[in-house]
Length: 100
Image (tube, rainbow, N blue to C red; front, side, top):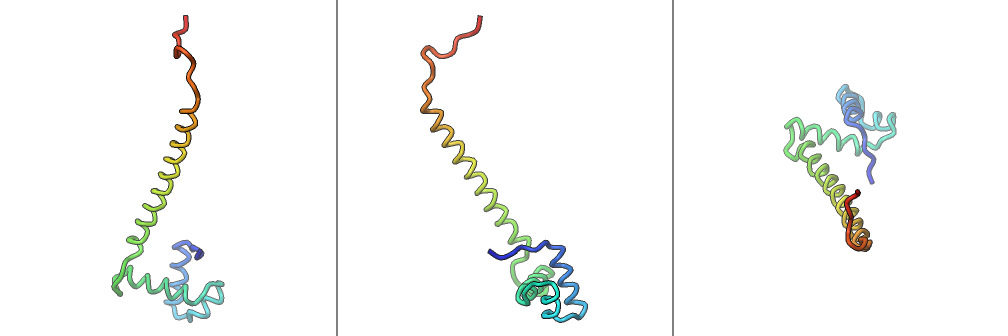
């Protein structure tokens, strides 16, 4: 799985490249690949409308939705399993009686 970098870090990397430093130099200095910086730069150009394509916010929303769906499905599975286990427990004869 690819490593995720904070958006502030990506912004600073792109600022270094925009200030005139070579991509290879920045990549080696920070221990990331050249290709990663090129991808970030391309995505920045898309986000600012300089290139056609899907912007970053359009990519984040489906990922957040998938994560939320997975959380809800896991919770539903827990609820179903709990219902199965509780359904196997027999209730006492006559049910509950009011206390005197």
